[in-house]
Image 1 (tube, rainbow, N blue to C red):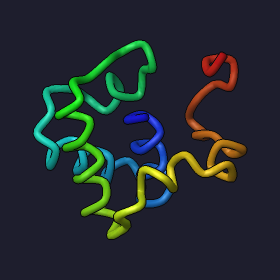
Image 2 (image 1 turned 180 degrees about the vertical axis):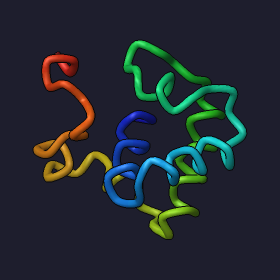
Image 3 (image 1 turned 90 degrees about the horizontal axis):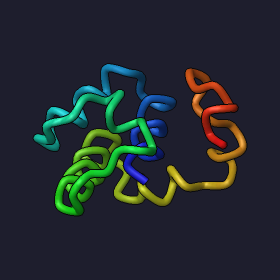
Image 4 (image 1 turned 45 degrees about the vertical axis):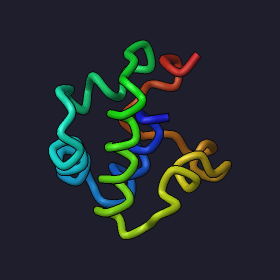
Length: 85
């Protein structure tokens, strides 16, 4: 779910906003690390990322919006569709 939230932030506000979310959340990971579905984060870290994304976007429902079917139908343009399988 963290990767979906960060992809939503990237699509709506750009890559610099993703960097800001990661900095604000004070997690020891890069955006690339967090975008890799094979990597896990602690629950507390994920919550801090969600909270930072909500604060930066001004959208308290950013987590729900990131999982929106319309969002899923239009995945991150920087990701190869074959990588999502």
